[in-house]
Length: 416
Image (cartoon, rainbow, N blue to C red; front, side, top):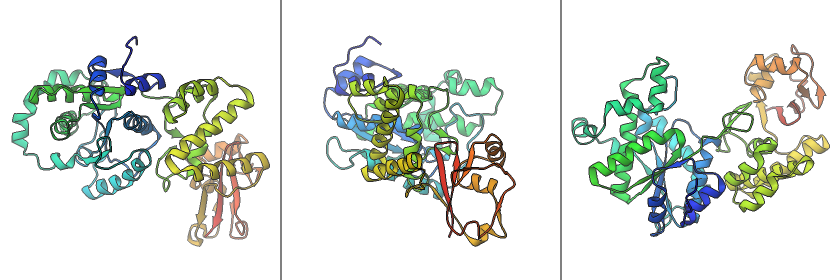
């Protein structure tokens, strides 16, 4: 990329590795120089929390605000009723309106950590597309909006094409998703002067549709900008761990487990993650990412502290680091380990060690737990665990036990 941006926001996006593509670098750059321009990212409410995979775009909104722009977090109260088919192999399960509202409430908590909401020129807005989608008249919508969409072109988008090429069903409901997302951009431009939609690179087709629609209907000048879809250096999708999704809500993933996810980054990812997920200067991120040996481990601790502080606060980050040092360096239990509390009903006459490993999140299935034990990767109270048939009763759990998977993942099990 040889373009030399003038606006602080585009400079930051390029320097820190956020940019995959843009519909018009120069046009957007010049528009951003004209003051607090609104830009949005849309979030469908398919779960009660966002996960680490969403964090790149949340950080983009945060940088936009720091550079004087106006972030819009658009909740998909309407579009969640349809479900985004992009690059999925099957249709999403349909959620009830009540479930969607509950999920939006869960997601809302995260944004307050990263953005300042209010009525000022660069204060963030939180909107819900149900506001304009729920009341649409079907025939009017088809006539006024549907006529601007070519089926031939919609079929050519990679997100749709890949599904059809694999001969997997794509329902008419899902096919409408891209029209609704495009309509969101039109409405946001019309109502709030929004000039930019941002998203992951898998959203490119949907974003371009919104730009085309806005130009056709009201001759609005709007732009699209995408971030790369991130994988870790070992090829895994960003945001997944051995225990499942890395949630951003503390009641779905403890601050300690969140901290530990970042501490466990591979050496090759440290510099890149520091630029994307922290606000440390770019030069410092590059310096830290180039370290080796024990020094790179301290850089990982810094990464974990910085990212956890942004989401959960500095006290939570400090507590997580203290627990990690207690567990890893001194072999103790630590105050902040993920804890599984069993009721007497859970315990019954006894519970197998395999069940405990799965319930505590150290393995995704009984088969995985047994393999962990067979490969000498499991420990109980820091002693090797070799018997996959071990049963524990109330006497064995009279005091909390510590389970470990490998050297870095631990959990406490106790009776309630």
